[in-house]
Every structure is written in structure tokens, then in C-alpha cells.
Length: 104
Image 1 (cartoon, helix red, strand yellow):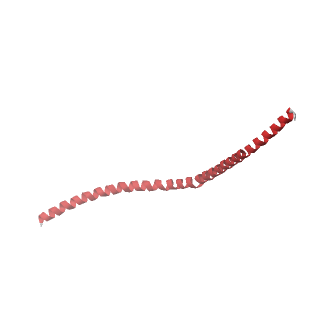
Image 2: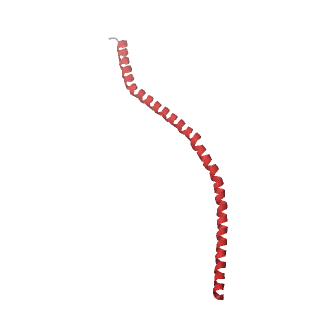
Image 3: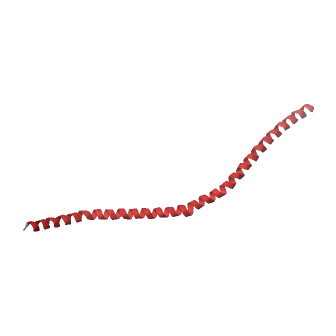
């Protein structure tokens, strides 16, 4: 066997060994690429859900919340005023009751 034949044989053996060891790596790379593609698709799906459903729901909630919050604010101010009026009325009734008790 000549040196060239020996080198070709060694080269052939090395090439087969490298290919054999590279196959699992290629398979792993393909699996990783598939996983990345799956994640990208899922991300697109989630973004669509956020855009089409959640944002519109939040917008609708905000549109309904603002008028309700303003009504509550007005009602709270009225309730405070009514409570103050009730407190005054209680005091006046108490005073009148005491005066009526003294008279009778």
C-alpha cells in the first residue's frame, strides 16, 4: 500500500467517523430549529389574542369605567352632604326634644 492509498484510507475512515458523530448533532439542531419555530408560532398566536381580544376588552372596560367612576364621585359628594345634613337635623331634633321635655 502506498502512502497516498494509506492517506486516502485514513481520510475515508475519518470522514465516516465525523459523519457518524455529526448525525446526532444535526438531528439535535433540527429539533432545536423546530422548537424555535414552534415558539415563534405560539408567540404570534399570543400576540393575536392580545391584539384582538384582550386589548379590546380592556378598552371596553375603560370606556365603561370612566362614566361609572364619575357617577360614583358625584354620588359620594352628595352622600357626604346628606350625612352632614342628617347630623344637623339630629342635633336640632335633640334640642327640640329637650325643650319639649322641659315644657311638659
